[in-house]
Length: 348
Image (tube, rainbow, N blue to C red):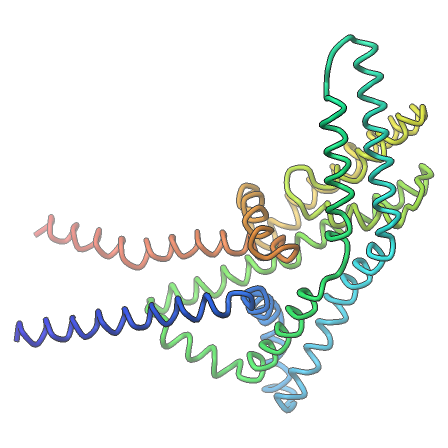
């Protein structure tokens, strides 16, 4: 009997090794499609209940229901993002010139402070390097790339088959995930909360900051207010600095042009109004959708941007949240069992 068990374990280990080797091989060959897969999973989590409602309650054909939901997601999600990217991309030349203007304004403000207080804040060489880096990187950041279009195409390609096979896929996952039923349910609910918080909450907060910022830019009299609206929306999705990447450069430009009044108003409006909107919504909206710790957002964005580019603003925090959730479930699934067994042994 002992020999049979040992042989079974050897076969099991060899089988696991083969599976892991194939998984590593497939990952390295298909890792470029990982953002598309994550995007498809994210949208699926947001739409799968509607898919069940259309196909099981309204008796729609699965293919038509999937196409309708995909079209709906394109209109609600991709269309605003596409318009924003197109608006910014069409002003790449202006953005580069404006970046140059911002750096020159920063140099003037720094020089004035250095002369007035007899201190050295930044060298001319470092400011010129900053100017060159901004001018070089900005077109690539604002321009819509071919890689993004390919990612979106494969994302919807994967999403279609996930929606069509939704019920069968969820049943299979429920049956084959090696966890207790309670932990499977917990995993499903918490992943749904994480997706709602990151995929819906963060963009909504950024959009709210952009709209409030646009109103202020129009009142204050900022040049190209709609361009700065787009910058505020994108910057609002970044942790720590956030929308300050939009209104602080504007204030510097006003100061450099000796428009002290509007510069001060811009800073007060930025930190007092736009910043307050950010804090209020993060402590209300995000807590209702899913309580994500700020550190998860910060490090998630850093990791996500390195892995997925702009899409990492959403997927990075999701990955860290999922990792922490799996650790909690592992503790609940295995460590608790060992503790319970140890307690029973001690009692006996």
